[in-house]
View 1: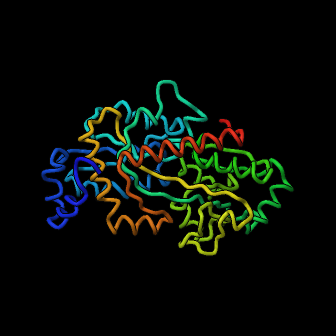
View 2 (view 1 turned 180 degrees about the vertical axis):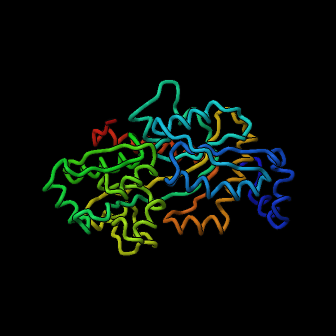
View 3 (view 1 turned 90 degrees about the vertical axis):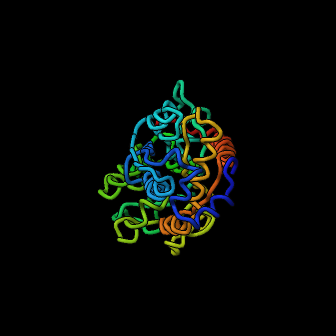
Length: 324
C-alpha cells in the first residue's frame, strides 16, 4: 500500500466509518460510485461486486451501486470503464478470465484490459467446480467420462463466453481426457446457470458461489473441484487430481479503474478496497461462497495479471484453444 498506510487505516477504524472517510477519503463522501460488472447478474463477478458495494459505501460515505453491462465476453463493460472519467467514480469489478484470457482468444481492436485498465485491488479467489444437470446419467467424474466417451459429441457444456476461464478450463479438460464435447457460450454465468438448471445444457465448470445452493438442494450434481484441495463447503467432492485428471485452475476477481487515474487516487481506492477485503465479515462471506478473500494492492494485482496472462497464453497455444 502506497500513499495511505495500512497502519493509518487500522488506527482510524477504531473511530468509526466517519473517521475513515475523513480526511483520507473525504473526496468521495456524498457521491455515487458505480461498480461496472461486465457480465449478467448471478455469476461470481456479480456476487463479488455486491459483497464489496455496501461496506465500501459505508467506508467512503458514498453511494455504491452495481451496474451489470454484459456482452462482448467482458469487453463492453471493460471499455466503459476504460473510457470513463478518471475521477474514481466508475470502477470495474473484473474477472480473471476476461482480464487475462479473452484478449488471447478474442482480441478487440483498440482495447486491451492489460493496458487500458488500472489495477486497484484484489477481492476473492475461487477454484472451479464441475457440476452436471440433476438428471445427468452419471454421479461421479469416472461415470461422466465413461458416458462422454460412449457418446462423442452428444454432451454439451455452458460457459460465460468465449475466452472465459470456464471455456478454457473445459477445453483443457477435453484435451487431457481425449474427449469431444460441444461448447455453448453465454453472456455470463447467470444465464448459463439458468439453462443448466433447466436441463438445456449438460454441465458447466465455474466458480462455486453460483452453484453451491443448487448442489446442496440436489438440483445439480458436483463431480469435482479444480482446486488443490477439496472445498470445505462440499467435502465429499474430490479434486480433479483425485478424480484422475491433472487439472488445477482457479479464478480471481478484482477491481480496476480507468488507466488515467492518478497515482494518488489509485492509492486511495486501493487502500479502501483492501480495508474491506481484510475485514472479518468479508472474509466469512467469501468462505461461505467457497472462495477466499485475498487483499492485494495495485502493484501486486498488476503482477498477478501479467503472470496469469503469460501462463494462460501457454495453455491456449498448447491445447489449440480458439474462439468457437
